Image (cartoon, rainbow, N blue to C red; front, side):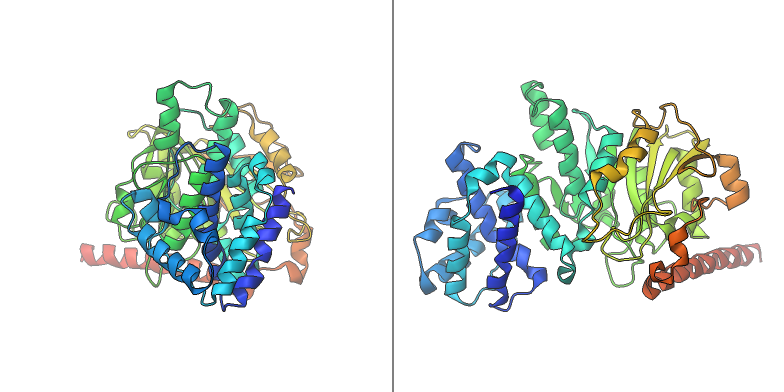
Length: 484
């Protein structure tokens, strides 16, 4: 069986859980609580792991050797005990874990189904890749609502390729989700270092325990990320690679500065919790992406580099949005903007971009002299289940970007008919009013009303503009009051 076959078989187990009243949003979490125990068993049986991370009572044979109510009660007790494990990482993975299965026969069926999978085939590609496939399957199932935590893997891999992470560098994702950016960076470095065998023991330990750090606000998503990292050989510190916390709160201010920051922050304006509460950011804003952008600039080391996925409103929002963009271009060398096609994220019609920049020294000003923009959006195919985004779609962008991760490779402006153009900092200031929403190609698809953004997306963009204008007016009123 191929990994994709096994993923499909695992996904089909959802039908078993649905019969027990479990919906799509809970499905993967319910399955992985069992799956992690099974994968630990397979890894120790095959010799991939020398020591079992789980205690005796939580090992796979303990589950296969029981049936009926005895099995269900044992499993419930196991989850509770694991959540109280003295091993902080196991405790974090199983924090607040509890099964919603009510029928013992459904648990037995799941266990038998997992036992019936050809795990030898799975191990050839790595159990971590199998797990990634399951997360992707869940994200693509629109009923699950998990797409908000899952960045398309071809996009992540393209970003990793041009950012060129190296062994010894610290890599951070302040909105880690299921850990996609961190795992892709680890995979890239392992490929460059013969699976870390080219490194000495000290460097190898650094890669496994200190090189990667993420933060995630949602505990259930963090659970998926911790399992994902462990199955890819990334252990992190006592709390694991991904810490639980609000990056836009006090926990985020404690994150260290890093050599590389890669992230796809959550979309939207904070209204009901999870919003910015930090007092160390230069500009106060309720816009999560603008707050995350400030965090990233603040937490890059001098000379460090970043790639961050952001929606269009961050590029054109007035008021504090413009202030934050100016601050970004002042403190960092913003060298590249990639305009992404619509329809590749969970909300159809949401327009997104990737900003690539390098942090200058603390005292530097005027760090951005020119910005290169690559337009993948205009006249792009309609992406969806029938025509998925692939790695090949990014080949031309990667070629134009060049080999230098900080945008210093020789680049050629393709002119008004091309997708790759250069704009000076002065032009952005004088002609665009410091907006980075730069487009020049006529998009034939945009004339089709069916391709217009959803009304909710249009409303969100209008609200962003209005909020920006209100913040600007409040600033003027405050200045007038001080003058009076």
